[in-house]
Image (cartoon, rainbow, N blue to C red; front, side, top):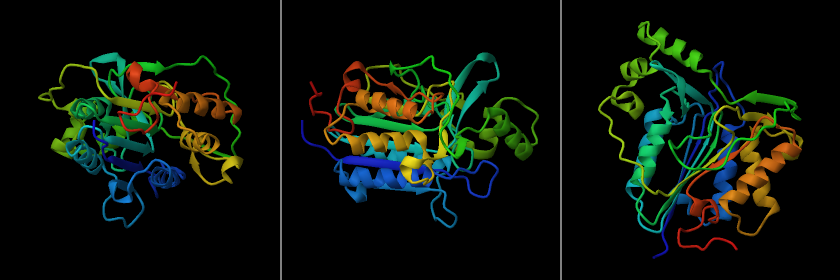
Amino acid sequence: MAKGNKWALLVGCNYPNTANKLHGCHNDVLAMHEVLTTRFGFEPNYVKLLIDKPGNPIMPTGANIKKALNSMVDQAEEGDVLFFHYSGHGTLIKQPHNTSKKEEAIVPCDFNLITSMDFRQLVNRVPKGATFTILSDSCHSGGLIDKETEQIGPSGSSDATVAAEYHKLKEIPFQSILQYFISLTCKISTDIGTHLVEVFGADASLMFHQTAIIKPLRPDEGILLSGCQTNETSADVEIMENGRKPCGAFTNAVQMVLKENLRPLSNREIVVLARKILVQQHFNRQHPCLYSSDENADKIFLSSPQTPSPK
């Protein structure tokens, strides 16, 4: 297998000048950009950055994020490494005809939700012999690749102590998003899809288009490192270890893991060690998870697909 290229899309949404404002998401993706180019061999020209800084010509809207992700997957070949880092709000979508079923989604700056079904469709298109790693520092991010195998999952701890002067949850409640779109469309419906299709048309998530066809599951190269479990929240914080620079608690933990361990680390090791750091920092209601195939769980983080797993 030939050595491939490394492609990355880094998205940070701080939602400036809104009630949903966060502080550390731009810092998260800028820090990730540095580590990708200095440690993991990503060429700067192959790393795309989308942040919602006022005045930016291309904002991290739902359509722009999906366009960039699709472009990355479209040009991928055997041996390539694809990476998507998202830092921002997440939410759980309530299905109008299934009260018990909720779907994970990230919340771009324009609220055009990108759902677990969208990520499943992307993963299904990754060519054989390439890998697609997603690191999502957002609330409810566990399970963001629909039906991906859980390798490191729920933890029973419920201690709510947090050692941070500033601490905000990276979550926009579903009901708040629904009410926002009801005010835009003037339609009285609890079906969020009705509103999203009305506002965004074809750019709305596949989940809300009845004609969408998702291919049957097959062994895939999707790897998800989530900032928390599906039923949990992730934190936007200022902590002493980071000089009180605003950051996502999970992204910061991953950065600390990489700084403290110069050897190659597997995807499983990254998540296990990040969990330990969050416990040490008393973020005991946030448990990062890993979703992937058995083989990819023990593959080296962001390594070429042909790189053997550490013994």
